[in-house]
Image 1: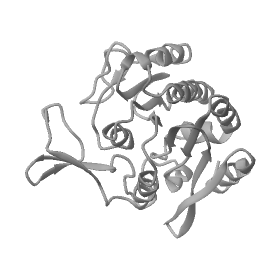
Image 2: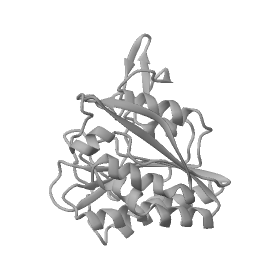
Image 3: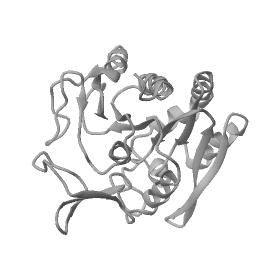
Image 4: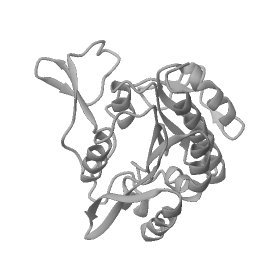
Length: 268
């Protein structure tokens, strides 16, 4: 799907949500609108997707199944703020980064780990830090979505939908913060559609636990929401080798699960 068709699909949901452009970016001489969909509710879930262009399942799930997502949220009085495709030129080109080669992910915040020493990601050896700040640089796509997200109060839950383009086979795992018990049922449900990567490495530095979960303060939007005190924050991964329909099913399971978590807030 090219981005023009994608944008047409997103704009078709004006009867279900408030569909706005929070910005526009120019990549390779082409101007791309950046969309935010809002469904009102008493407690809020923020969904982001499409930071990496070669990870199409998230943006496609949100484009193809938004009616179902909006209905489920309305039934539970959960408000949605959805940023369905943050890196449109990467999505259109099927490339990880934007057309200019910039990296839109992991640029929401910086950590001061020692006086005057700043890092974008905390390594296991960084057992403490002095402070964190919202970053003000980075690629234009990141700056645009970061500025828009920061305009609003912290939500009750936040879900970032990704894929893993490196691991073989049909598999899933997630980066999560907070109570792991909230995520185990979602991962168990997902296991019917792809193998959960348990107690194994997903790259040279990160290993999942027995539930297929990883905790990593990486300066991403998920990390940012965690630092704001959002009780439920996760970045879901399915491999790009997973059949698209299975990715859609897993993404929808987690979206519904996060709507339920937002509905209960921090009361449980």
